[in-house]
Length: 66
Image 1 (tube, rainbow, N blue to C red):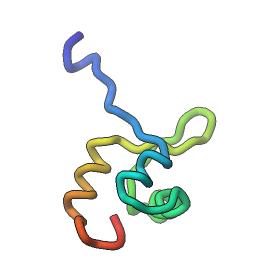
Image 2: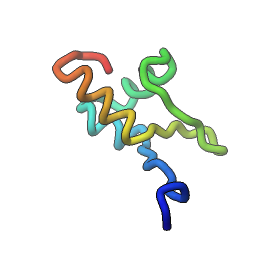
Image 3: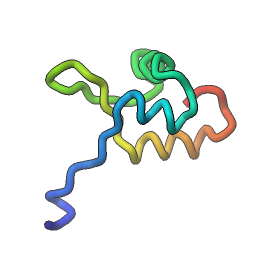
């Protein structure tokens, strides 16, 4: 498989919350406020690209918001 065939790794709200060390509801709030980019699954669940989450965590390390 080449890189063009690879899909970005998507995280659930619970996985994202664990990375940021916040409640799942906080991650949902950040997403709804436009602070944390997300995609929505066909069933309506939020998903976050791991690379974006890691970048935001690095950029805002020590800050209470992403």
